[in-house]
Length: 316
Image (cartoon, rainbow, N blue to C red; front, side):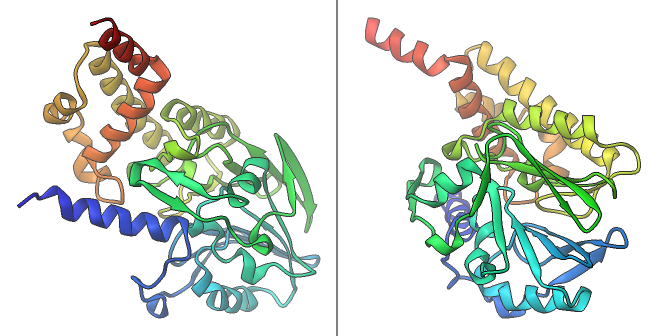
């Protein structure tokens, strides 16, 4: 029996939930939407999928990400307990379905959906996820963002300067972070998986070095008092973010050094380069073996190893 087959099926099932409206495999009726107060007017909502950020005030509600479509009514009810004001903005941190699945249910004449240009592009067409040999169909037009930007923008809302800015080729090619400058709260989307290995969607333009650059950008913004909302995991801070960067950087360097030594992917996995981190950091969606696989693919592409290998084979 191949012990890796069950793991593969679990990964595929999870990714189906991550990127599409395929919900039959999960009972969302049991999911609770739990609000966590961060400041007087900013909250984090946990449920299933990416963490939601909420900013409330006299002008209304600004919302960051929308989780899965079957949770929309529960999310609306949770927000209603925080504010009787209508939602005016829904900002998406990237295109994946666990962050945009509810867009269509929230989008109306009062709400404007905001995201990076690449989020609109990806949600407007079918996307091939090479790692899972699977095509994700285009999202309905009503689910797609109506306001897009290519670098950065500022929403002045509820007394906040809400800075929305793009980080290149990190988790995907359309990642945005959202910084509430007055309240010193940063939502990092899936550039930050708190306490676990990150998922880097290479098929959507993500890369390990781009992810590290995004983390470095966040570190330059935050200070010891900043509250950080990760895409997944508990509310965080600069100290935990620095540890996250340390882990990714260390594993990246180990894999890169092994690639330079011309080790194959199989040999690198067999060497178990990151066993000192796996128990704590490999318990989520991405295992220790999986993060090596992702980094190897990302780094060999960036280093041009694949092209060199192909050229060597052709010369033989």
